[in-house]
Length: 46
Image 1 (cartoon, rainbow, N blue to C red):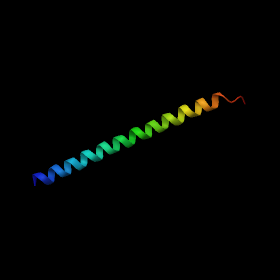
Image 2 (cartoon, one colour):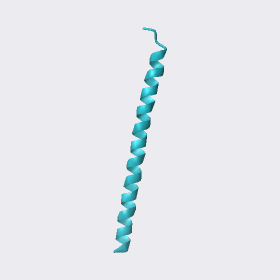
Image 3 (cartoon, rainbow, N blue to C red):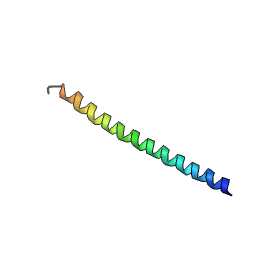
Image 4 (cartoon, rainbow, N blue to C red):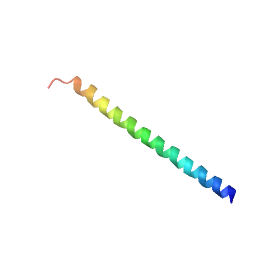
């Protein structure tokens, strides 16, 4: 029973780490998109 509990806890911990990594990637993508849009738009004289 203890082994099963450890496996479940390890799986939940892995899921939490995975979700945090995905959230960090999504935030980084937003920052990249925002800064790319500003730098690309600043060179165009419309």
